[in-house]
Length: 213
Length: 213
Image (cartoon, rainbow over all chains, first blue to last red; front, side, top):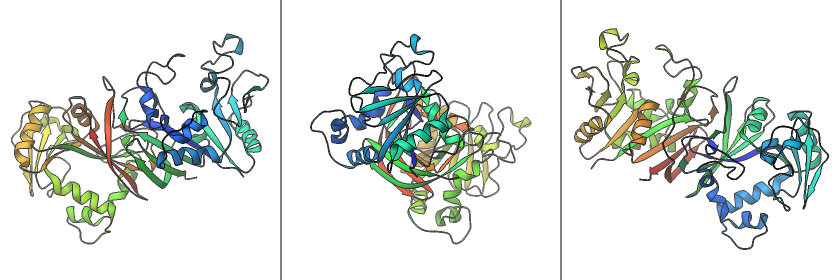
């Protein structure tokens, strides 16, 4: 059965975005610094239809994650910034443009039913039956590949608390943001992890953990 | 001039202690898991007057930190658990016992003046003039070695915000505590770091950062 993993970048103080997120600045104040390790990479540029870029451990890690991903699950806000009914969404077709970088089925968690949306090689499927239904549909779509929980933080926390996440790879960017959207929320009880690989470059420390049951 | 560093263990979600700290359980619920990487090490055991223990990268890192430390700065609560006048402290001579593991001068930040306290090879000196005075006195005592900011979290944050901390080494334990005492507080502005060494074992990922000015 497909594994369920999350690959996510945080500041050393655990923020996945800075404070004051807006539609214009979805990563919040200072949040762009988190992803600096990715922008110049060959694998990132290729994924976004650009030539060139740097090769090396950072690029290999990103490429590995892309290759293993057979389907994606994300929250409604990560899709479009909105939360309410689609008619009220300032950005109803999402902010991923005409060529979203996923190239697989993306299952969007929402309370508001909607027909699938096709953009480039990506199909957004809207799931109203909750996180378990979403991951089941994603597993079916992923085939022999794995399911990526893309975010946001609240969605990652739900999968972690429900014991559905098998693996968590954190890319720790060398910055303290001091405020923003925290990746980890309250847990009912501690969760043990097992670090099974650590790679680093000056831009980020990549720690891959298995999640203990 | 002596460098000012902080060597501290956190959970992946950034806690240096679990919730519900008490005098009996100073690391809070689940907090003992943070330091599991240290208890079996040769360098930890030696520091605490015990023979034997494991050698390897974890032990070397701890030993390196011990060897470079010429003086220590800590908060009042890390010393004794108390905050108010010494007459009200349930633990006025601290909870470090008759042979504290520091073996150097320890400068304790407090609002309540007091004569120095000698225990084994450790001298506790009480500083009421604030964090800059404490680090100056510690530098003088450290000679050619460095000054360790031992904690707690609030004290580390004060030194970080004041731009006095040169180096931060975080030992990331493979656990999510979900609640507790967070190492990093609000900052006025993001702080850039430079990871200059990453070492890991199954017990912890050790990331050493220089703090950018």
